[in-house]
Length: 587
Image (cartoon, rainbow, N blue to C red):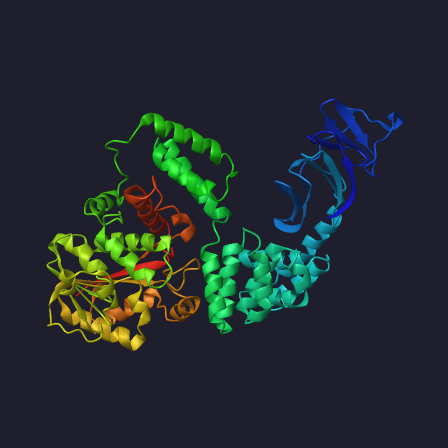
């Protein structure tokens, strides 16, 4: 849209109307009305029109919709953004001329804009009629011909968005959308870079058609907009990976995971908090609202609702005997807390890991969240740890899980290719439960254990041949009816960060070796296991776990919420992907 003229008013603009001939604009003002001519200048009394003759124009004109969001005004053509413009303040009033050739907008700053549309209403209708003619009998050339039709409007950005939208509707033949958008992108990269949304769609298409280097600039431009940052950075990371730039790929993936919530994620947080508030669960609602406000303190009425719940929580005092939702992890989490397994300062197990990770010069607050969620998943899969007489943890590192299971009365052992973690962190008592050994050739008799575990992505360091031997050895050393539990990183997750001590190069190398849940299930079944199932967990980016170790939000309550969030997401959508997944199987 082109700005034809502006008019500065002394107060915020709260109403705009257009005269019957489209030539006179009425500005509703607190002290009366101001009449403007077609060029935005005030008119004298002889040209004044009666208010009754001036009808307020709707924000829909024929095929157009006019949408406002804070200081941005967007023109939609049949639901697809045609053009957008940012004004000098929050848009408070909009009107459209009767011929559909001009839009008027007023702002909180007191400015009235006269904006010329790229297409008249008649021109827009003609464009849509031609589009319908093309779509009546779609063939392999339809997407390309439609793109030329849209490019004739002078807007490559609209062409990209419209082709993508028609593809999503199923109006274009499968497989034709990405090559056409990629073609537009290669010819109009400079123009597309000015529009983050179009840049993202163009970058996606270039990536999908093998033009990874060309895609990167557009994706990085799109990443400047919070709406597309996470997805754009993740796709850029995949481009870098295919180009062999491993460190760049790992950095892009890490940035994607840490980029904060988009609009959809903010809405989920807001809705969760409101639901808790409406159930009078105000202490929990405060926690959810704070997670949202940390990223967007102006989101709708979140701050007012937060203060309301905070006041109610304070006046109510500590919650006593509150019943947890059916299926909640609260009972299990409380048990872990009672056994000293949630990372308090007196937890030797947590300090072992912390000491070990210091050797890598990095520690991550998100690491403990992933490990605690993994612990919940493991104990949920085991069902009754008290029924497990003996267990073995493969790739045990600092004997974390043997120590966890020992709290439940399990005689637990661990093996690893290195004893560095044992020497650095574990006392002599536990050293007797550890052996330097290979998980593909375990030094134990057949049927020695009721439970074999391989946790925190250890299996992702194995080749396919090594996994086959590991599964065979697990099957051999388990007693009939024994259980195998494995946790692994999911290659389909776009917000994955692994553990904090990995370097970018190590992350890139690990990412190449990830195994899909389906493949691991098939390998496990081929090894003779039954009842094989996988469950995603940590189904949220790291930003949602930020603050999990903070006073007032850590421990059992926070862990219960995150575990329940995993459960609810998986129950609501079986295709949900998490940063990790847990495989469980019976011998």
